[in-house]
Image 1 (tube, rainbow, N blue to C red):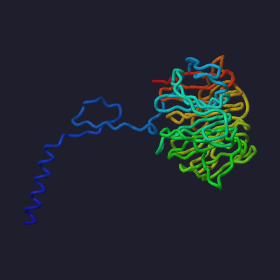
Image 2 (image 1 turned 120 degrees about the vertical axis):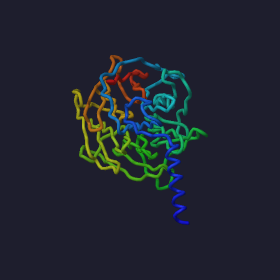
Image 3 (image 1 turned 90 degrees about the vertical axis):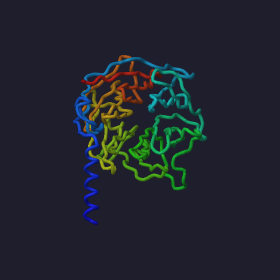
Image 4 (image 1 turned 60 degrees about the vertical axis):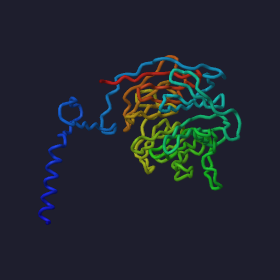
Length: 336
């Protein structure tokens, strides 16, 4: 009986093998249709090597100085969502404006004040797509960070508990791989990690020019590996920390040569983890590799005080000009 049962399973397997289509694993780049049931396995972005940047060109300027819709007074931090809408910390108008990639007005949040949903000189924006879609605003003049979700659009201060950590002129915000919120606590010369519930986890820094110290930091970014890059404005440096907050690298130094910085302000990362830094004192933007090599710089004669920066997946770079009260748009060109 047992032998007959085994024979039956064997015959069934043979029949199935005859009816199943032949399958091949194709290498990336293989032409389609070269095998039956062809399965093409594509590498992820982390495994693919980025095409070299061969240049960056100026495209246009969007917005202008003013208080109306689509107008700005000292625009600072920028963020971009999946629709290519741009969120602008319109600091001089004490609001957040949302525009599309061509500069058309979409909506706005806030007005001058200290209550929830009101701002005093907001300097940075961050969007979180983890678990819930949230907008974070560095409400610098009110010494706090506020956030809202896009369902009720009601703002709340981050970390409202009685034992909440006190902020002093926070200027920068970044979002981690799992929705963690990183805040640059500028007046206290440090950066702080909050969990998704808004509870402070750890703080790093302290005033000075040493390896683990900062001087008026203004922004930070987090890459796909969890490394944190802090814009150490007073020391004219970019400082790199691992996912545990340990300092592992620093580069820049005051100057105007390629790779040097003068009063850097903001940072943005593209999908390849290249770092775009607004080198404000030199009136330019520099692009660095994750290990600190400067590979290109770009500007335009009208770029007077580059501040915030955002990079689209298509290689469009949006740079807020705090002095001209507009946004300059550039295009990255890569070798094919």
